[in-house]
Image (cartoon, rainbow, N blue to C red):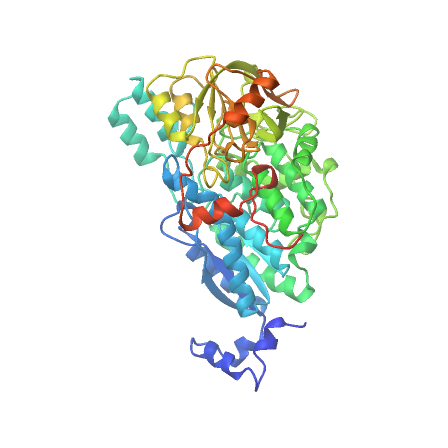
Length: 557
């Protein structure tokens, strides 16, 4: 076994590096073993990361037991939930690339032999997988697990999204402030990633499907002892990967990425996956475009259903068998020879898993619907693409036409919605919220939740060049490309213009004569840039469009 760390730890020329390690208590024996970095996004800010210090200790035990030496470092991780609905949300997507860059810098600066990635939440998971693919070293992803659900409210176990829906009900006089406070106290009873199928749990499931996490590990609850057992096993697994010289790009490739898209489709995963999977593919040097999402979604049945598409939560999904059961149900569609961090193929990993065929996971033969996942729309409002999630939309809303109510920011839209200015039958258009215009492509989470709470989710559509939370439901279309900031057609929409959304036909159009749109474009005066300094300014200059995953290019073309 050839170790790259030995190149900077051999005597006598690298005795100084050995001295640095010894100053922290490492022994000569430690320094002869594989040096394995642990990139830990632990903090007391993010509920999904609150237990990662404990998870890390279990990983270290496994590494030492298998003959490796763990070295740990910190990685940033921001909480989407805490950042939702205010200026902080603009900073969330940009953290994804900072996470990838920082892991690359630490691993390369210290020449680790392998890397264990500890994270659970929305942009942290894809950022870590991007780093693994870029570095192409032995790597494994370990998450902290979802939180348990709260008491049943309105037919489902409460979670953090219950609060914003509760605000809408409070506004309508359906609940009291005391009831809202009680909900606040009980909806998130433990640490962990939020208990619905938002982006966090979607990406943890994708990490398992793509082969970068141990089988069955994606949705083990944060507070279960099995979470720590799996972490310890992951520590042993990374040493095995180093010994076998199995690197990240042997696992993250065209076949495994297609498997991940299939899994995402089969569980009705977050629309944010349409940003993150292309970004991971870019780092793995795999050609990928959004049409692959649409093609695979059309032929992948929806076999699992969770909130926001159903009352079941992710804990219910875990108890029904989780990712391996779903992969088993759709196995005829998968690339079963794709390698995983177990050292075995995905086909070998999922043997023996049987579907309970209950209210959470159905069979391939009798699914919830014949297709799942995401739909990619095109039209004169979205020449390059737009993304939606049919699984989260009432079937009666899959085709919708109505007059536009245009807002140049999410804040403007939220105020209008709360003031009852948005009427049934309208299409809310929120623009200048893309990667460059936002900047940072914030989620229109609050707007959709307010519409839901006010009883308008099945009466009003929302389109945007921003994005959505994985928990949003209702008729929504996001990721419109090109975005308004780049002069895309969404910048030309005016109040009263008819917007036609036709998801079955994959169309998104503004029903305005092309000559009128051309004239509007000549007179277009974009609003003043929101940010002119700091990292968001830099991001606005470097980020690619949403249809390319909002990536920052890291290599010469």
